[in-house]
Image 1 (spheres, one colour):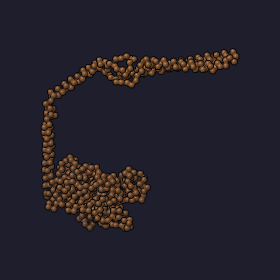
Image 2 (cartoon, helix red, strand yellow):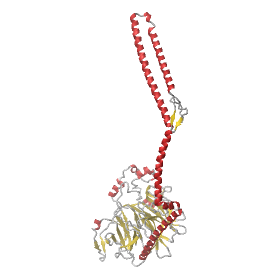
Image 3 (cartoon, helix red, strand yellow):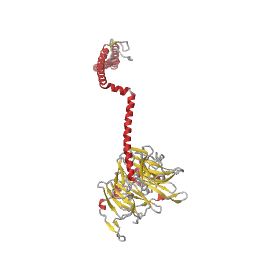
Image 4 (tube, one colour):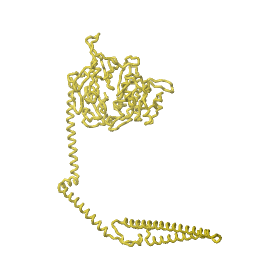
Length: 625
């Protein structure tokens, strides 16, 4: 290793002498100049002046000598420090050149000179390292020999013989297939037994859960006696409407069925916000809060005109602003909203929350699911800031509320008070200054959104689009007023729509009169049925696996939470078939292996009677009535 330049001791000493001589010379020159200045007029001065001048010259000479001596001491100290630093640097460079080599040479020799390396210390150090490494190697070798002695033959066979590995993998795969085949065989036997019960005489109500089925309401309802039922997920009770229009409650813990409402002639029932919304024979919507203390006040009375019949003394129906009962042709409910269409073609929206519930969840409850511009989404202001939405497109005159972080109390809605969604049934054309009426033929509500189809095949929707369930590309947005969704190609026609949770399903008929299903929204558990697991999807994609099945029409699309089903009809069969997709972790889907998620349609061998109905519940799994 070479260094650029290092001074030896002789060069340092010569330079010190030169600096000292220069300083002495300068000092003498200064003294001489000063003496000449003070002595130029000494001959003209008196004796006293001469004496004074002499004393001053002596004082100046003394000061100059002290200054000179101090400068020389400082200079010598500096030169010594510089010399020590250079020596230390030279020694450090030598020591760092090779940690295993000692260089032999005089101090006066330059670092650039050729030195003869002394390898003695290096060899000693290497010998020590070699001894240590030999000890480690002996320990490692002993361990390897021990392992080889205990199981070397097996290790050699596993790692050196690839055929053993392949054979082992084949054995594992074969064992897994046998287990799956065994589970499938048991499942097929259960399905066969289920078909026998469903198509036998006096078939009971069947519930499939945890990979098996059991019967409900034995000896309590006759065959085909149940019209519809819903579940209260909190209490796990079932509320049932029979063919006579009476309301019953089934308690699973007590295995008990009791009458709640009698003689009300109910035709349909739906559940929203811990309340039952029931359509009676007058096409009025009866509202019944699920409260035990309320049920205890019910009493059965005889009718005056029909003393042989009785009824429960409860009357609470949905009314208009003038407290007049409203009549609906069809209706549906979401988590906290109601949508109904009257016989004159008008569509109404209502909030199912109480005022206290709205105040408690003021910034969350309204996601646009009411479709009323005068009641914009609660978090529109915050949403617009974060999502950079175009606030001007929102048809609201009160722009001050948009900037206000606190939801205006005036925008709280009356509980169960229907308001007409005029923008849904009417369209205004600015150029012609005319209003076009729109006829809604199909609609459905999901968790926080609603979808509509008019007589021209156009799609309209409003509500939450956080996962693309509105079939709009702006995922994460909210639409508090009806918007027109993208149209389908001209060679297909949408005949029905079904909203379930955060999904929308379109029932489509193509030019060959073949039906299939499109889906959009959430697909994290396979709900989209398009062979993907996606959190959100704004495009409507075709369900995979449906085209391979034999059917003529799709009778029903339904589901609950993350489970979906489709009931298929065939003209050549006297029964219906059912297919499932989605999450089957706990075995709630009949005919499918438990513990899996299915992202494509799975056909089952279950044969449903032509007049049967399927409901998926939280507690009881899939119920077939």
